[in-house]
Length: 329
Image (cartoon, rainbow, N blue to C red; front, side, top):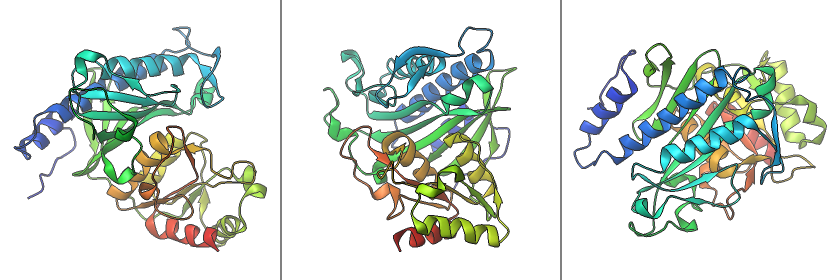
């Protein structure tokens, strides 16, 4: 029988009670989730006082994506690497900010998991105090434990993910975690420094909302524009923040569909498959929704490189199927 959790349960209690339902488990995954939560708390604290801590603005460097690195980008990336490297659960980290995989030190080569992470999604919004977040995915390694991890541990379909989630830094800090047991959201109480269950058993509701940057519509395929026009005719509301993690979070809790199509300038799409597309698609499917690249399910994709790009249609299953069918036509 599936265990039922009520609001107010701490993340640690939730993880330990879930562990008790799996007697074969060793607790390594719990330790990994606790490390991710710790990194989220540290980043949240720095985000909330970025102006006072001298963390606003760019570093002057450009990352592998060709984007200007913000000071908080750099801090978030280092925080995640440091949080994941020392408890023996992670063997490799693949980050948006790193050209190559980051192998955990020799002492921890036996780590069971590979973590993919966008340390600070939406970082171009930092200086205007808009919502930003962290996105992560977790794979169980394929290579032999006790040796360095390999690319084959991460270049695999999203169906191999064992968990995924994000931390959103907005009016409150919320950690959303998805695994085989479903999708649950935890809100950070800064007065006690603990995440508490606030969104149990999340399911994407029906919602008449479409979310996209319509400024790019002249570059989109005709089918995508037809969907947007039909949505307007059916009384849908437009909502767009411009931060992927924030737009997806609204879609997850309010329903509707988020669109980031390919266009004539970015025919392969702009979002990153491994640490944006895969984790959010995993969450969407676990919450009863769907996610495609405009042709097929995101989670069925097999990446050929670490920073591979993808279009993204995600949210309510019926709406995702509708816009995907129109995009194919």
